[in-house]
Length: 243
Image 1 (cartoon, one colour):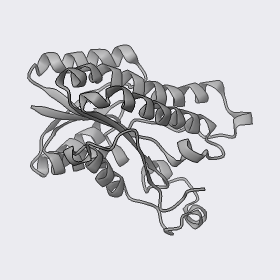
Image 2: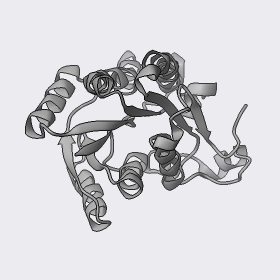
Image 3: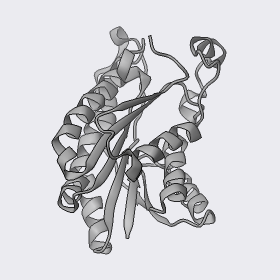
């Protein structure tokens, strides 16, 4: 049985990606969450209602030991399983001007987004290499490409993932494994609920925030077999914000 693992899949962009990959590709979805079990169950229920299948796995992507134990436990319980697709979506924000930023807020954001990418990817990549097939998509951000005031920690974390995406893509391309990233701009999610949307939308040439479904469709293409000659790429999904 072929699986797709989506981290931070309990809500928002991650949930939309999990649902879309089930619909488009028939993968059984491994829905990772850290704290919101009810939301993860809701994502799974939607997948099942649409005729798909999946399961919920709890682990903190920032804790390598916890990640390794969870992935090892999954394979022990499902010896015939193949995690063919990995979407590294988990992330947090702790925004503040750099001059006022606490060290813990810097470290926590780096731990989840950047170290989380390493922890989860390293846990599943060896089997991809042996199987000579895989699709990895990292959800980054416009912040990681151009920098955003008040998000030095988030920009650094996502910028680091972008660099790693391009590097790892070259390492595993001969094994028919692609490693790409999508970089959303302003997307309507719980993470953007507290933002001054009326002001921010003026910065977007498309004159609106994006939807989680628009991000999910882009990820779906990048995990498809048809995208096999695209690797090390960062796909902007930002309504035209490029400066």
